[in-house]
Length: 139
Image 1 (cartoon, rainbow, N blue to C red):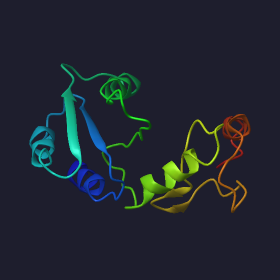
Image 2: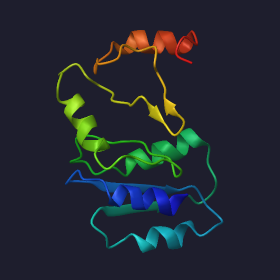
Image 3: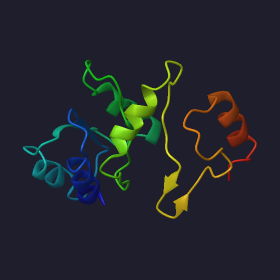
């Protein structure tokens, strides 16, 4: 799914993007797929792990590659897709309220998730959302 995800990132309408790709020592065509996107509209920064590492360590390695001047980042797995306006909408929410620290979405490939959250509302108390999640009230 990596090529499809990378194509999706290239089609995002937000103007100032960098795509950081952390190759967790893949044994497939990951390196050549990454190379196919190197000179496209969205700049690609990639790094390859010397050995397979646990998911959290791999994500941390990707976060370390985010350019210092970046105001935001989005953690996108190799089989995730975004709508062309997803970043624009996320930035709009992030900048709508100075207390916003994390922006997510209510959509998965199967449909809406987080439907227990109030419809029409864009900003939620993070502690409340985490409490509901840990109590399995958000399933």
